[in-house]
Amino acid sequence: MTGKEKAPRMLSRHIATAKKRSVSSARWLNRQMNDPYVAMAKKDGYRARSAFKLIELNEKFAFLKPGKRVVDLGAAPGGWTQIAVEAVRSTPEKPLVVGLDLLEMVPVPGAKTVQLDFLDDRAPDILKEMLDGHKADVVLSDMAPNTTGMKDIDHLRIMGLLETAYAFACEILNPEGAFVAKIFQGGTEQNLLNEMKKRFKVVKHAKPPASRKESSEFYVVAMGFKGEA
Image (tube, rainbow, N blue to C red):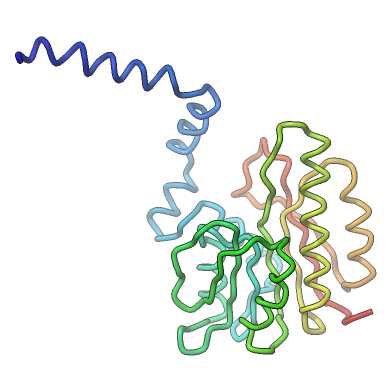
């Protein structure tokens, strides 16, 4: 077979692949290729650009400190777990960070992780066992449910997941502990923020620079847990 015969076949395969690629996936690919945070994550060895969201939040609010015990909800692929391990100086010999995600995740040295749906009834007890009976000083949640494309339904699902994470935080946190979670604007989040103000001394919300401007996400940072009601 000659080179002239091969070229049209290769070209047709390329065109077919391009046709199959959706407009949204093409936009995502273009955004990833031109995103400075993606480049920095690769350079610094972080598994996701979202690592910089936690870095920026911690630089502003200083909730991650050496010796603190951390629970990372929605941990995969591990960017936040990496930052938490570095910040609290967790080691394989004395792991201070535990993480959970529905997706499989490559282990992070210095952290204990498990593949499990946080909404599974077993999840709270398993996380407590991973903490070896200790309470946590910080609960992180970068979780977001799978979306349906229907804004109102998606917002309710997001808020339901966040409320479950908040309830768990109130159960597992030490006094003066912190809860840091992703939240989306949609109209119902204010009720939860008001509830947090009853249980924490300080409740702030922020949109770190690493969070894309077009995204409706922001983060709530609740510090100074008052203890169980």
